[in-house]
Image 1 (spheres, rainbow, N blue to C red):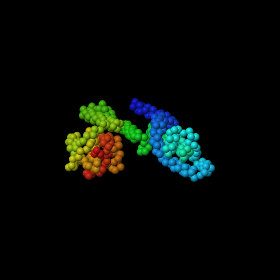
Image 2 (cartoon, helix red, strand yellow; image 1 turned 135 degrees about the horizontal axis):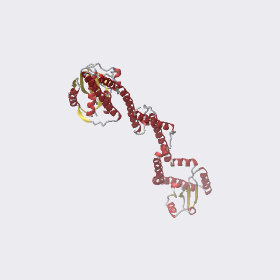
Image 3 (tube, rainbow, N blue to C red; image 1 turned 45 degrees about the vertical axis):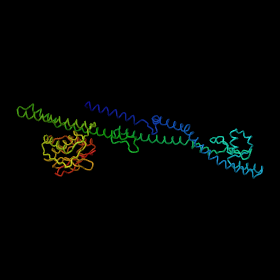
Image 4 (tube, rainbow, N blue to C red; image 1 turned 30 degrees about the horizontal axis):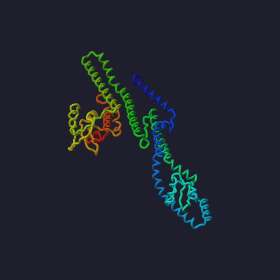
Length: 458
């Protein structure tokens, strides 16, 4: 076991231990942690409520009571007029019996007495003599006084209230606090449930379920769930690529290393000068192949493990293709033609990554296609399509999706004459993803395969 394998195994063991501890912890849905996290919110709601009760509400009630006082004055005035008219039409005994009957059936006590016997203030007496009624304090339910003759004053009230009315009044009085408490409870329970779902997905992912994802939409906690899912997808791709990389390295290195060992043994036994030069040349080619393979694997691993800095810039895709064709014709021994529409098109892309993508596609066509390659572009709605067509045998439909996976080759043999390690198109797919685009394979008009890179213009 190598040091890197041992380190990776230790890390996975640590992850497993942590996940096991988390798994056995009891995490209730309605945890007290929510009370700690949102204690300030609760205190704030309570402070707002009592501020309203002690400060705002009295100010509003004073304005309200002034309007109600004027309205009730008119109502009581009518009652006193009726009592005054009734007292003049009945004898004292009849008037007394009438008041007793009223007091039996009404919640508003009625009592008549001389003005001096009520102990009223001078202001109240002056108010009554002016023809108006007198109310000590409307908010406290105080009785109402009214003058029905020169010296007789009627007192109405205080108004009695039933217990059920007091209950309803208290409910209305404390309704804001009850509503706030219910809203807080519902909000905290709903938030705790969403956090519980996120915690469950995190725990499943830590236990090795790389397909576990946090719920999104209305169950998401802000952007946390989306960020977790993006992280989970990236880590999943990283682990899979590392697994493929490890498996591929163990297979791909065997062929050139085996040839090197064979040629080294033959070189030590050979006495012919020409044979020794041939073996040395073969060993040099194998070393170059190993160097190229390691460089390509490191490039793919770097692109897979970390997102590169994509520098988008505006460029004329037609002029850029003309320049790229000149460079490709010097490096790749294949006939390359170009197909450019008459109308110029400016697109946004990273020129370095786009050049790498085009080179890999052309190199792939030169290795597995025919003897002719056509490069060009076309506009599909709000997407630009960069394509590379060849006149080879094409790619079967069943391989058109898996061909972009790392270390996937249609040629199962590891013949170095065919070239490639199954990473060129995987790098192409990565570059397409960096541009928010995608790769697809269609049938070429020339009879081979058409590799097409589609990405948005903006």
